[in-house]
Length: 309
Ligand code: NAP
Image (cartoon, rainbow, N blue to C red; front, side):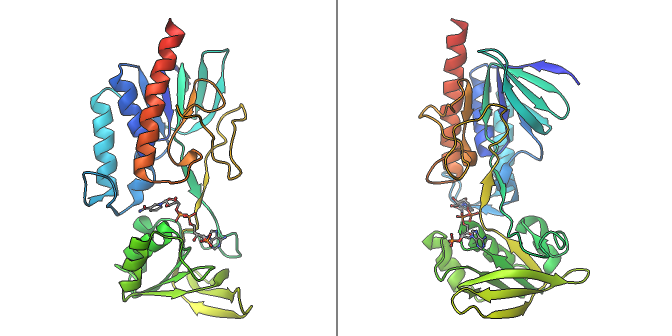
């Protein structure tokens, strides 16, 4: 296990992390970004991005690749590794422990995003990989001509539901209320799609099957009535939990566990910044992550400059 010295260490390689990497390395600070999967974060698994200025339509993986190449062109190092813990060493240094190596930094930027929320119902874990999935772009093609069910009513559920109509003979979106949370423009697209049906006021209580998913047990929350729906797949998009527990020191968080920062993106621990979906804020879009990250990297640069004075 090697010990490596950097000025800025970025944890997480979504749009926020990559933007912080661009600004950190462009400021001539020795900057490394550590990401456990492929750089890109959630957009790497998004078929099409249509709300990133300058690109009317671009595939998520292409945007991720462009962001990565752009940041690397300024000297950002991208390492594939999993960060296990971050902690302060004295007043002006941080230790970032990954599975492979240990990284020392003057400033740390957390862009760790979130992980999918689980339904926590019987059969969910058992059938994960056998019909239960959290990634439409990864698994959609396995369910050609089957009935695909999507759980959730937010942007992710409705957008991914539309995407899944490419594969399923029918996509049924099951929502626990009678109104979607998704943006209106996305809702309208789904309402117009002939392959999408909705089941309202309903929760999924159980996943049933043998070697794969065969049906779901549903419950109408208004009438209390139970029913069984034949389906070959269940895609769960019911939000996510922030990956905000990576620091040994307890950071200030909101009630949802999202990291609270000041307007320079600094967390309650001096020298540690947060950006993107892990940060407490009203809206979670690529543009927010990119904006936050710009501020975080510029602020981290200024902070390091002050340490040097
Ligand atoms: P979200 O906006 O938090 O929506 C989660 C949905 O799942 C809600 O409709 C919620 O129902 C439902 N839900 C939550 N827990 C549930 C449970 N236990 N059982 C059944 N249903 C449950 O999450 P998201 O759609 O993953 O989006 C996360 C963030 O990313 C949002 O800020 C979103 O705007 C953003 N995003 C944006 C885009 C885009 O702009 N193109 C795409 C994807 C995601 P209720 O409505 O009743 O609460």
